[in-house]
Image 1 (cartoon, rainbow, N blue to C red):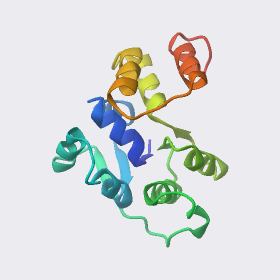
Image 2: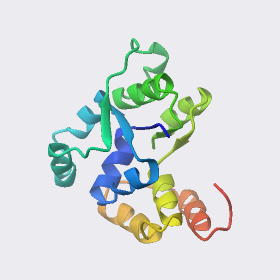
Image 3: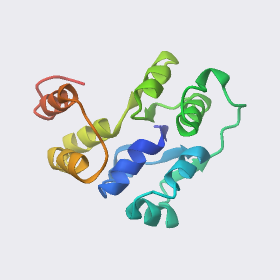
Length: 163
């Protein structure tokens, strides 16, 4: 399975110390260079800085081979490169949280999931307590979810609806 990650899901999973579910779910994750640069932001949380000093072997940093896609200019550099890399690699999944990026990826035929989707998948496989991780995500990071998103996430956790 080829999985490409944008910065946001990596950032949140690292902050929660849940990033190790990624290789257990997907084996290997590709990250474009712009995503790594976004994670290196001067205001990055300490856990992210430490993670960057010792990037795990399951992360493969890739350079986007194609020229910048001008139709993606409304997105940030990380989202742009993540979408382009997902297209180039014929990725099975793109990890991305930003709404505009998810919509554009979906429009291009790229399957997406975000931080909550990763937590849900890991919870279903018994790799973590997804509800607890979700509560920590809201409490310990700047992640925000609407009441509707929270309700849907909790229903999915309880198995009331399929994703």
